[in-house]
Image (cartoon, rainbow, N blue to C red; front, side, top):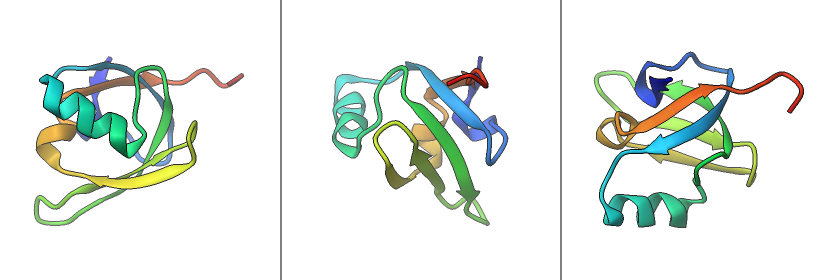
Length: 81
């Protein structure tokens, strides 16, 4: 299990845990990011900018700040999914 901010780009990842308060969890839920969703890190902003994350499960893409990305724990998704 690793933090989203440390995850490799262009690799399918499963959200294992969101370690944040209720407000942050609600915000991610509103953006379409839930536990057990399959996501992919598309791009990392230069100079400490946001991360562009694609949710494969719900077919959405969002920019997520680095502070939030440090609280999203992921693991590599199985190839068969």
